[in-house]
Image (cartoon, rainbow, N blue to C red; front, side, top):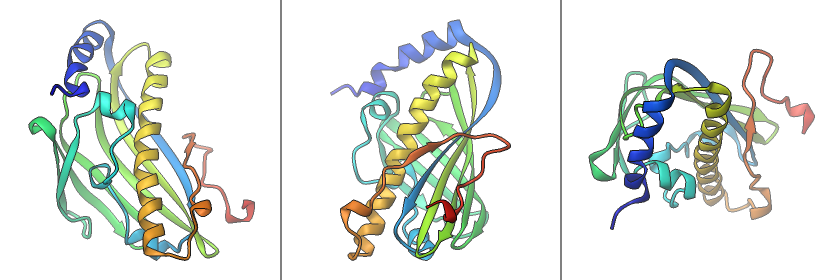
Amino acid sequence: MVRRSQCSAPLYRLAARFCAGVPATEVAGTQVHIAASPDSVWNRILFYEDVPKRAPLLLGALLPRPIRTQGDKNGVGSRVQCVYEGGRSLAKRITAVEPPSTLQFEVTEQSLGIEDCLVATGGSYQIEACGFSSHVTLTTTYRAFLHPRWLWRRVEAALMSQLHTHILRGLLVATSAENPILSSASLATPRERPEGPACKAQSCSHH
């Protein structure tokens, strides 16, 4: 059976042919509140390729299906190889590890079939204690090639929102399973966090 992501390849080539321009660096971030300690959240951090649930429609249509990861996230310099369907892959190198608050990585290789349109360059997880709970912020940095940027940035924002939400929901479920005292009502829906110099994670005093 032909995957939807394979059918999308001609669309990528078409978009790149008519809309390619000077690459722009973009940052997308999403934040969620989890009723669990930072240590508990840290122990369950997931990459996109680790989430067992099937990806939502937009991700499934635009990206190949992730199969597994190889390597670990535990030390600076560690390499994580992400394997996708159809021989596609993504490689990440861990650049900062500060348990239980910070995990950062850079993308060293990307072969997902979307490289004419978008190339991921890195990402991070920031976990902030808030009483007995945690704020978790997932950030992705990428190079975007399609113009006009005011239009394509909206398309990319939708993709990044689904990507982050998929990962954070997986983290919410994993953390809930580790802490049976949590109820489904405590699993908040992730929300997109606008990026910019003036944008900071919300203070616990606001919750």
